[in-house]
Structure formats: C-alpha cells, structure tokens
Image 1: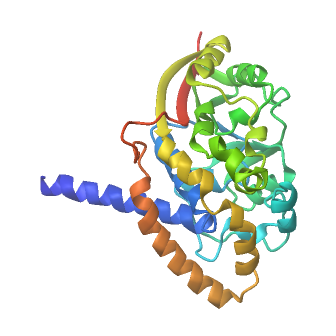
Image 2: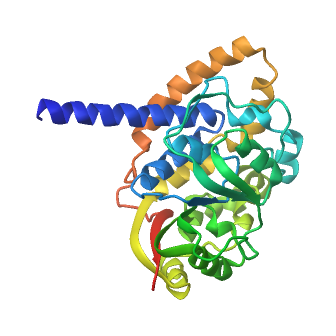
Image 3: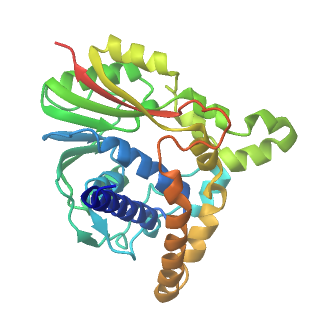
Length: 323
C-alpha cells in the first residue's frame, strides 16, 4: 500500500475508534446501545444533511451531537440523569424520562455544525437536548399528529424512530410536505425480521417470566415494524423517490443487542451512581477501554457470525420528494 494511502487509512481508523469511544463513554452501562449508535452514525455519514435540518425524535440529542463530531467529558454519561430505576424492571418504566439539576453534560469539543430543529414527544428529553446547545430550536411534538412546520421548510430531515409512529402513512406524508423539492429525508428503520433474532421460539421452555425480564414490552412500542417491501411501498405512496437503501445492522448484531446488559442495567446504574466520583471514574475508564476493544470488530455493517448471511434488521433509506 502506498504510504500516503496507508496513512489515510490509519487516520480514518483512528477517527472511527475515537467516535466509538465517545459512544461507549456516553452509553457505557448499555454497551450494546453504543455499538448500534456507532453503526447508525457510520451509515448516516454518507448522507449530506444540508441546513436547515430537522432531527425528528431527537431524544436527549446525544446521538446527533456525537455523530456531528461533538465530544463530551469522560465523567459525563446518559446514566447521570436517570430516575424511576425501581420501575424499569417491575413495569417497564422509562429511566431516561427524568431530568434534574445534576444533568450537566460538559462539552469538551464542539460539533462540526448545529442542527436547526429537534423534536420529541417527551419534554424531559428536550430539556436534556437543550443542555448541549446543539439545536437552534427544540419543539415538543407527538409525531402521530401533523408536524408543526411550514411546507417546504427543511432542506434535510433525519429520523431513526419512524417505526415508533402509529400513524405512519400520515407521518411520511408530512415528511414529504415539510421537505423542499430536491431535499433529503434520511430514515433509519427497523425491519420486522428483528423478531427472528430473539429466543422467542424457546419461550415455552424458558417461561414468561424469563421472557419478560429479557425483552419486556419493547416490541409493543414499535407498531409499524414491517418488511422491506412494505416500507418501500409506504415511501412510494407518500410521494418519495428512494435514492439509496443501505442495510447496516445484521442478525448477529440483533442477537447481541437483544441480550446485552439491558436486564441488569438498572442495578448497574444504581451501583455506579452511588459510589464516589473518583472510584466511578476509575471503573468507567477501564470499562470503556475494555469495550472499545470488544466492540470495535462488531462495528461493521456486514458483521455476521453465521454460516450464511442473515437478513438485515435495520436499513437506512435516503429519500427525496418526487416532483
């Protein structure tokens, strides 16, 4: 390999590993979420998000902030500002739907750009997003209702939660309405094949209690999961042309993610949030180093440990409104 090319490859690999470290640092007690976010970020890097850009269902903004090149201090992570931990295992409570004065992410590197707008249905998440100073505007909104934006007002729109929306046809039509002709809509959508990469076929042997602990009611919150052809029919009906369709999460990724540390995360978080800061920082540093090594080989869109390729479970669609 030519020395200049070799140096470029090393530089790209170094930048990729640093971004992975940032995701693991933010999501360290749920490392399976960190590598999924890294896969999303790598896929999205191929899409130019021209301004003004809307980030729909932005949540706490951490994903888009880190994707844009932002960096957060090592002592910060998303588990610093959680609540309702006792309800997570008992009744599926959302630990992240909570915010208090202790939630103060320290930015040590500004992202390469800011986003014009972010939306989410949970005001607590938008309060957290505001702390990043990354969005010019934050709008609380349930995407089952028409979007609160003027027609043709965004050059680009990004959303990784379309499969959470019950009124999906209306939502896609609204995306078409708010995007300028020739603009870009980037959607990262799960496929219903994700259900194949669980242990549900063994549920009778394992028992409902085991299944409830491992999976909870996650699939109940994804009312519009479907196969690839159905997603593409929906886009066609809403008036979009598909510019690109890139599968980037495999069945092997889904198997790992479906288990992960999710069942024990509430206990880990309670433990780590109740040790003194110095010890927590030491444990977290070693943990992040370890998972950088463990997860780095997984962060490829073609990573698959099966004898024959498994079906993709998440695809990135790049759409543009038809004239």
